[in-house]
Image (cartoon, rainbow over all chains, first blue to last red; front, side, top):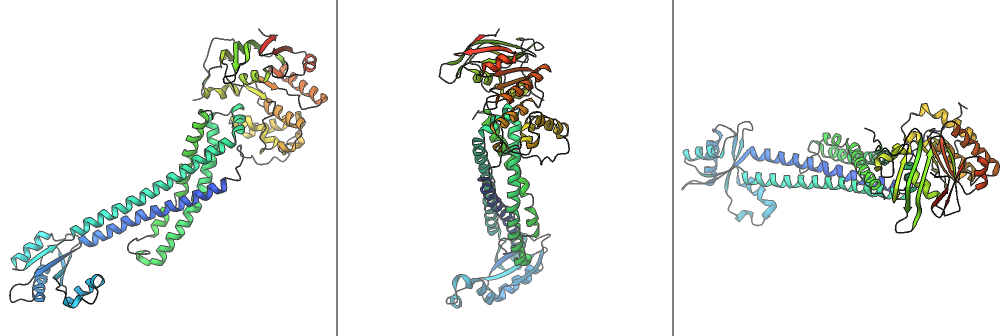
Length: 293
Length: 236
């Protein structure tokens, strides 16, 4: 009787039409959040490195004028001295107007004219071989300038610590969402196996090993998670691409600079989601089968 | 590496397909449903297991399919100790037997074709090597024209024949059938009996549990009788 039409092989496990679309939706949302967390971690790390690099490339010198010398004169003399030090690209005395502009956001306009401002010199260091704070202090002392050199090390440490914290939080959020996806799969596998108990018994009595039955569940949920992961990743990629596109070269904001590379970084999300689902479903199914439940 | 059942020198696998030695079984804290059952089914034999409802026929078949384990005594299948075999070894035993369940145990979401093919798919056999066999099997039980239909659309008798086709499609060494003619008319019952007899002639050991003693008598097979959990005749 060869030649009759035989339909494509149906999946051995029956579909859970009621629950699977909702599970897919949950996993898609979790993957979307995980993608954003991952991009957030990478962008925070990138921002912190940028800020630290910027802080490393500059130093600020506070100058105290001698008797019969104005602050501007002392600052100009210090700038001239520092400009000749090896490892310094440029040294510029900060005039009062520039100093007031820096303080205005914090103290406002009302008190600025009466406020005694320090006399500062901004030093831009050679990024390849920057001058050390010690060499700057020595040069100033030799020139008879009473000054204090600040290499921003205090700020740098705080920025690095803050960035590390943000990266850690983002990675924690990523792992929690991945764990949440795994927990959802565990729950779905248990619920599916409880609902399909007679099917499992039938498969078992027809010669299916525990590994074969677990394989059916792991394949089902891995495929489901791959599809849902792809959906979540595509939405996240669109959001990140939009942020990058709108923000130009610096991304959406200098505080969280995203790159086109971040968009590509999300492409393995479906594979990762499928792996998490596969492992969670297999472990759950085997534990349930061997527990005889 | 495939798991092999533990070997035991309980039986001669060439001559005995089933051996029960002093087997008892009870559910949870209840009384024993089977008591001190001793039974040998030689390879290639044909037996009917009769007895009133509640005698323990279905329970005995559950022990033989390893769905339940004896609470006492020894069970050997195909010459191997099976009563205490590890769970991982059960598929090895089950792939050597075909079972027709009283409640059919068909998968409603699969077509008749896929239901019959199920044991072959589970055993990992390539479709090319069995697709024709499955079609022939469906033709043999009179369901060749319904291979794409699902069990909910079949009558009780058709489901029964489908369950039989699934049980025998792997050409098992042992066929266990629980009331296989219970849902069919006399003519179909006779046809199914002939089907089992022809399988038996090919060397398959057959054990049919049935309350239909007339059918058992007509079959010419050795009759075993269970009453109150005890095997009264035809055993060892």
